[in-house]
Image (cartoon, rainbow, N blue to C red):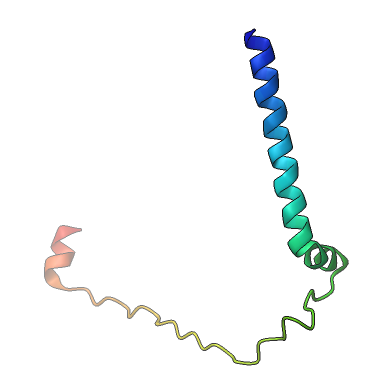
Length: 73
């Protein structure tokens, strides 16, 4: 009885995974195929973003050695 129940759980899990993969491919299959071909996957429904984002990263300032820090080392 346990083997039959385990088989049922295994097959239902495989079915659920197949449904999830089919849903993902339905929504973004064209983008995935274009990525494998090395092309841009943009369609007319999704125009290219024209706004540039600026990211400013601060470089950490060098730490100056202080006498109390030298003693600790």
